[in-house]
Amino acid sequence: MERGQRAALCAFSLGMIALGVLGVVSQEFAFDWQPVPAFHPGRELLAVVCGLVMIGVGVGLLLRATAAVVARALLPFLLAWLCLKVPTVLAAPQIEGVWIGFGEVSAILAGGWVLFARLSQLDESPSPLLGGITGERGLWIAQIIFGLAVIPIGLGHLFYVDITTRLVPSWLPFRVALAYLTGIAQILCGLGIVFSSRARLAAQIETVLVALFAFLVWGPDTWFAAAPKLMGTPPGARFALTAFLITWLVGASAWLIAQDGTRHPRARETNKEAAPESGAAHARGRNT
Image (cartoon, rainbow, N blue to C red; front, side, top):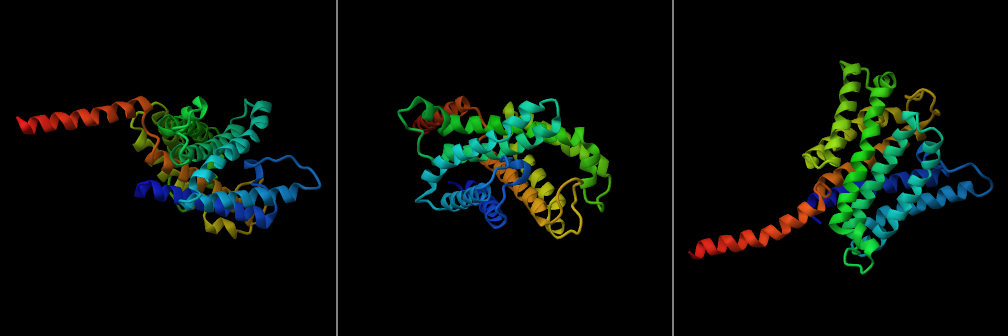
């Protein structure tokens, strides 16, 4: 992996580890981002196991000896995580708010898909299914998923502009305008990524936007605040810290997309085929 890819991988892994540690310590799932139904006994134990899996995945991705195996396990884990959000979307598809959480988890899935496509070593598999979701085609699938996921997140800024404005730090000027601008920017980034129109630049801008959102909205000051920053959320540090880590993982996923998944697979193949031909033509030119 190149340096940028490795850095994005490290960011994603650290986010998974930190979220897993939080789950183990609290013996709880990540609020509405992991809406596991309430049941007793055993829910706390399942939350701990889930946290330990996330820690193991995060550590395993950082080690070259285990990265391939862990990447293969990461994709079904994230797919199962996304499936937890499906009942809420089906129950109230007309409410934009439910699509925000679905989009955030989908964005994390896209980041995991990049790692699966890049690290699983299944692109040469004889299975048509595995061959179709790994390698260059897998990177393109991840790009489409991420681009689509970003759009409802951006729309959330516009649908709930009052809430978004309250989340913007009070010391920043033009808070309402920032709420609108960031929402529109995210929608445009999502469209650019989906349609491969300056997709790398769009993914880079999305990375910066999400990183700023993580630290300005859910930064360390909110972890120790006496009152919750978002009305209606539980008091204490766990919600704010969870929101920060989810946002971190979305940003890390955007970074992975910016490094890897920014072209249609046919374009990649065309470039690969063109490279030897241009090299041969250059050699013929020197010989003449």
